Image (cartoon, rainbow over all chains, first blue to last red):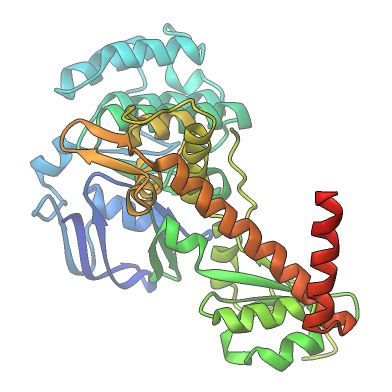
Length: 302
Length: 125
């Protein structure tokens, strides 16, 4: 069952097409990662789901309703990012009190304990907090509101490494206790690998991949070895990414549908087989050219 | 245990193997309740779906059984099954390496057999 269903959704900003005929479903009670490069359309999509903006065309439903101007969606979801708009004349503690009034499932104990753990002062105004602390404060609101649909748009902006680790762990623990639908957009996929259950990869406003994390981890395989040996056994069409290492060595990423005989034969001829991390894979898949940044500097071939 | 993220082995397999090891070394005995997917998720900081996949693998290999609503428990001959399974996997890898070397050096089957017998004799005396 999908909590969020998109069908042919398009979002235009003047002439710019931010989301282009996107059809995708977000599963209920899972933590889904929305992954994409800068400008891929992550925020545009999430804002439409939260009902903050309206799709230009297509059909978008959240809890079975169009989210724009929907009270049901607004009461049952929260959109967290680093620019969350909070009343400027309320201090941290007053914001928390207002949240408690607004969200029926607000977990006051959790909020207070997290605020204390991350040492956020209660009597300052949110915009006086440092960038990292402010993001942390927003993330705490997102978790403690305990709404059925929690959307985090790049929640870790400005957080340092240890705070990020704490945030991921807190989110997981809270999710284990109170399962709900969580959508998280981020470009730090390597840090999120174990937290996410589903991955949706978008690029240029369109869907590139929708896989479970487990499948994504086995989606591709990396081959390291003599270029000539590899090209004898691998077709050009199978290649997702390639990189020359030294004169005769290559690193080649292919889809993991090689037969086990082929794998053994590659292994026997001295080719190393390596797993490809989901983070790297997403970068390779969304690359404009198969050689990545190196192609820009490779002026001879063009 | 610390999960190895760079391994060819998926995380859920690593979880299953960790539980198997717990059974082999006696930390979990027959009819003991094993960790739930949520406990494993908390323990290893992973998504509960991944943990559930590890448990499913144990279920499929007949190492645990399920009691509806209560959880999963260690089966009677779990230890024997795990030991047998590990033996098979280990032997396969070792023999594969051996065969690779044998092919390299052009050793005949008879020659290989004689070598194995010689080593076995040495072990006995």
